[in-house]
Image (tube, rainbow, N blue to C red):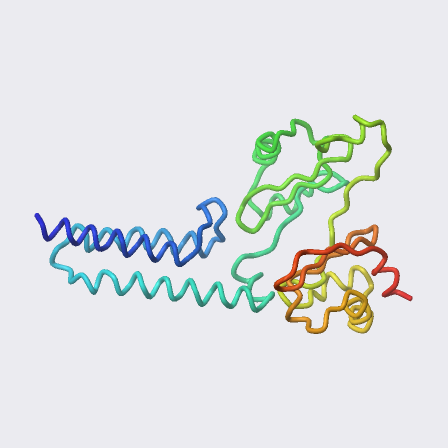
Length: 238
């Protein structure tokens, strides 16, 4: 009995340490590969607990290997945009200003009821209240409302604000997102001019740089607070 108790205690502490090493995200915030690894760890941990014939080391070693795999996958998803898209996918717009993007909804194996339920859970009750609905890579739904339905709405102050625009992420974790640059008609020379204007000396030090349709730029350099800049997009196009 004491042996079983000690084995359970050791395995429990080991799994707890490994899960802490994997990060503090909740199940609903995990990427698919993280969910799979977590479920396998939970299943493997029960084997040495219930079967005293399995050497304790043989029960802990597979757990350590899974944590190592998780670390490697996480490392490569940070370093490579393409690898991140292969492993985690990419956000999918299922509602746009044109209405429901039915093909995107079908590709996600969702139906209209799923979409409406998700919108209601985000505290919106009609499709005409939302501008964009995005299914994130972890499966969660993000809703961008129309300007008159956003918190502290323009309707409340009788202002006529334009609808929100999805920003284009040009640089993510030091990597250039060429697809986004193409949409904004920015080449690498123009990007370099923008980086010079905001005093970014090394691209790898730039955590993020995004631009919205109005030309507002949000960027953050490692070790510094985020900053906003205006008209960099227009300046880059000259």
